[in-house]
View 1 (cartoon, rainbow, N blue to C red):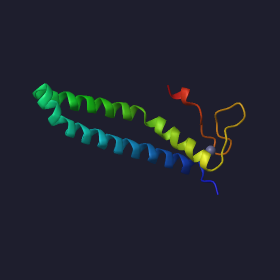
View 2: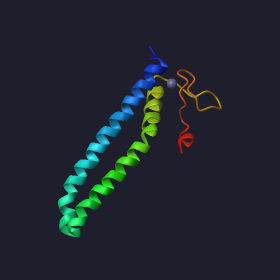
View 3: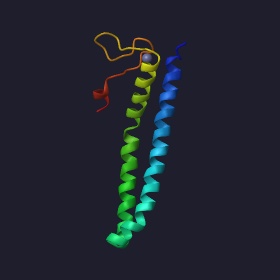
View 4: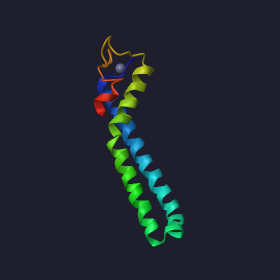
Length: 105
Ligand SMILES: [Zn+2]
């Protein structure tokens, strides 16, 4: 049985949010691990640079959240055997736009 469009969307959103939260956590963890190294290497400012870079990475991650959601929808459609309509990038079953990454650029 195929989940409804709403259900697929909710799952895709959940996936995108999970990726974002985990990604942000990993970035902050990496930043705190790198901080002492950066301070010993670049002086007191080194630690600040690491956290500025980490913050930028999180912004990039946040900006790409729709991409993660699209990826999740594509995966779900593939799993349930959905295919895009002929000559279109919209799924013929749940009417999600898939295989159309250029739309998000
Ligand atoms: Zn589908």
